[in-house]
Amino acid sequence: MAVTTMRARIDYRWVAMFVVLFGSFMVVLDTTVVNLGLPDLQRDFQVDSGIEWVVTAYLAAVGVAQTVSGWLADRLGRKKVFLAAMALFTVASLLCALAPTFGFLIAARALQGVAGGLMTPVAMAMIYELFEPNERGKALGYFGIAIMVAPAIGPVLSGTLVSSLSWRWLFLINIPIGSVGVPLGIRLLRDTGFREERPFDRVGLGLAGSGLVAFLIGMSQGGVHGYRQPAVVALLAVGVVLIALFVVHVGHVRHPLLELDILANPVFAVAMVTVALMAVAQFSRLVYIPLELGALRGVSEIRIGLVMLPSALGMAATMPIGGRLVDRMGARIPVSMGATVLAASFVALARVTLTTPLLHIAVILFVGGIGSGLAMMAPNIVAMNSVEARRVSQASGLSNVTRQVAAAVGVAILSSIFASTRSSAAQPTVSQELRPYHTVFFIAVGLLVAAVGAAQFLPGKARAMELQRLRSQEWDAGDGGPHVELTEAL
Image (cartoon, rainbow, N blue to C red; front, top):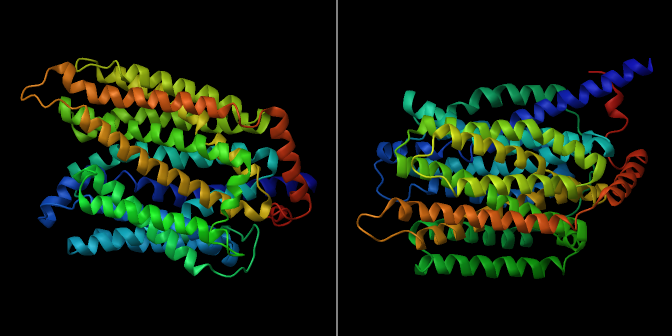
């Protein structure tokens, strides 16, 4: 009887994991799958400028929604929020595919972003709470496959759909995923985790939401039009001021939208620094490798996607391994190992020339993917282990906001450096053409070296085991996860 119960318990966990990953993959895929379709979108809607809003609207909405995800999950329950967000994402995808005008498409993309911003942090919290403390690294390692591999697969899928069908299929592919995922979730998922009916911080949402929108749009537009443009300067200034006011506001209310005092926890704070550094390095590869191959070599979108694919395979292979290592020895070693391997791959990318075979570049990216898989989820795991059960959804939301803002700021700064190092010569030499790309890759190496340094302050084995023990006590007391419900058969 005990064996049967345990099998049912394990079966439910992994079935629930599959359902959550099903929806999460769809959301993260949309961060990159649209990029290669932008030229077709521009032609179809006959817009001369502003096409970047297709991406900007989505990313800004994601950032805002992530700030409120913790409150919604604690108030309404993880299952309701996750499934409602998945349904909304599916409907928004259909609206994007059917968009009759450019303005309609932008609005639908923003709606997509709201749904996506809710789904990802809630999904991370759900998976974290499904598993006992000594298994959470392994579980979040599998979750990381969807979070980190989807952006690498995006260019392959995007290039295939755009070249063989049309840009509208970039959104239509979400419809069957959502149509299957929502009924599956209704049938199989259970409402688990901490619940609390605390008041909603409307002022906090207004400050944080408006500040993030202004800041993220300012960074995005600055990368396109330059950071000296008055409108860009104004957006960034307004964003910084509103976010600063939000920080002040948090210290004066009993139930803030985001509990920023979590950052006073040294383990969580160091983990977020590490997450931010590695996120910027990761996005530099996703942005500048396709740009280099397309702009300097004239490689087609589909071939670019195929060159990038080994990176995804490397991450998929090692993310569960990285999670297991965290469960057994803490985050310090897997982050140090993974970031070092990833840095070595960037050094190799900085030595690539226009005659380097594409297969050689694909191998380099595969090695980098191995490093990413070992390192990327480890800081998130120890960060969430470092907070008590009632703050898991808050910690998950804050972690996702950190990654979102870090990526936006980092990519914008790299874009400025890239632009400043481009040659102004009418006929630049090969060396001059490659210099901006190599500069960006060497900066990524520096960021990863800094991440390795920060990782030395993450928990080692002894401290990691202590955090697991504290979380186990919460679990046994019924505060850390769905201990009783998980023993029920499907």
